[in-house]
Amino acid sequence: MIWNVEEFTRAAGATVERLAAYVDESQRGLPPVIARRPPGELAERLGLARWIREGGMTPDDHAGFLAAYLEEGTRLHHPASLGHQVAAPDFPAALADLVHGAANNPMAVYEMGAAAATVEHEVVRWMLEKAGYGAAGGGVLTHGGSLANLTALLAARAAVAPDAWTAGVPGDLALLAPASAHYSLTRAAAILGLGERAVVPLETDPLGRIDVARLPEALDRVRRAGRRPMALVASACATGTGLHDDLRGIGEFCAEHGVRFHVDGAHGMSALLSDEHRHRLDGVELADSLIWDAHKMLRTSSLAAAVLTRRGSDLDAAFRQEASYLFYGDLHGDGDSGEPGGRDSGARGIDSIGRTVECSKAELGLKVFLNLAWRGERGLGDYVARQYATARRLWELGRERPGFTFPYEPESNIVCFRYGTGDQLEIRERLMAEGSFHLTSAEIGGVRHLRATVMAPATDDKTLESLLDQVSGCRTQTFGST
Image: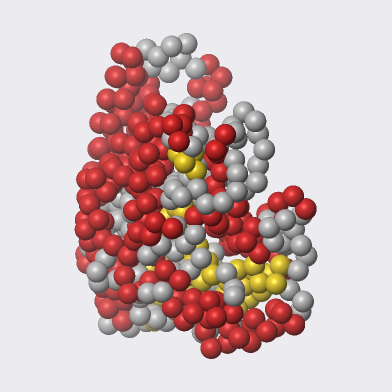
C-alpha cells in the first residue's frame, strides 16, 4: 500500500502538536514524572490487542492513542527526572528521527544513503578531533554504548590475536577492568568468547577508581597466570558514581608496558566541549580506543554512540567478513582506509559496514549534526557545564541538612547520597510510586546509596530543595524509628 500523503500530513501534524504539549508540560513539571501502571492494565487502556488484531487506525484515533501513550511513561524533560543517564532530547535530534522514520536510509553502505553516510563521516571526524586523535584515527557510530564497547574490544582482540576471527579465540586472553566498570564490558567478554572469568578485576580506591599505583601488581598477576592482557579498561566517568579514573596515569602505564588501553567515556566524554570540565579527561588521547554516547550529554534521542580508535586500521581489522552482495571492490581488504568514518570506495563513496556489527544502521549522525547545527559546540558545552553545576548544587544543599551523607564531591552530573540509616530503596520506591521524583541507586563500598543524574535542563534549585524535602519526609513514613 502506497503512502496516503494527506493522511500522513494530518497524523504528523497532530503528532507534532501533541509532542510539543507533552514536552512543555513536562518541562514545567505539571504531571507526575513517572507512571508505572501494570502491563495488563496498560495494554487494556491503550487498546493494544484490538489495534493489533483489527487495524483501521485513523489520524483522529492516532491522536487519542498518542495522548494516552505519552501519559504512561517517564518524562525525561521533567525537572524531577533524576534517574537514568538518558538525554532529554533537544528538538533538532527529534527532527532527525522524523526524517529517518520517513526516508529510512540505512547507510553502512554508501549507496543506501549518501547524505546520511557523509553526515556521519563528518560527525566522526569532529569527534576524533575533539578526542585528540586527529586524521589518523577512525570511528563509527553504533546503536548504543554497549555495542560501541563490543566493537572496541573486537578491535582490541584483532590487535592482540589477529587469527581469532578465523581460528577461534585463544584461551589465554584477559580483560583488565575495575569492578565499577559498566556491565557491558563483562557482557562483551562473554560474547567475544573470552568468558566472564577472563575479566580480571583491578584494585581500586574506596570509591571504585582504579588505583594506578597497583597496576604493576595486577599486570604481573595476569602474566604469571599465563594470560595475555587484551585490553585495560578505564572509566570517564563511572556509571554508578560519575567519578573519573586517572586517564593520564593509566595511559602512561599502558604505553610503557605494551597494554592496549580502552576508555569507556560513554557518559563523560562530552565534557571535552566544556572549558571548565575538559580537564577531567586529561590523557584520553593516550587511549587506543574510546566510546562516546551522544544520547547522553549531547542531547540526542536514543540511540547514538561513537566508537573511536587512535589508528583507523584498528577498526578495519576488527571485522573479517565475506558477503559477495556487499563486500567487493575496494571495500574489502587489509590496511588503513585513510578515512575516519569508513573505507573510501572512490566513486561509490565511504562505506562503514567494514567497521560495524550493523548493516541496516540508522541515520545516527544526523541527530548529532542537527544538535550541533542548532546549538554549536559552545551551546552543548554550556549544557554540560550547567548540568554538572546543578549536581554540585545538590551536593552543597544536601550537606547543609541533617541526616544526609554524601560519600564524595561530584565530578560530573551524577551524585550519590544517603538519608538516614534505613533502606534507601524504600525511599526511592515511595518517590516513584507518588510520581514525584525519579531516582536510581548504586552501591559504593557495598553500601546502597540513592543516585541522582541531572539530565533535564529544567532541573533547578527549587527542584533540588523539593527533592531533599521529599526524601527527608520519607524517613518517618518508611523507616519508623530507624
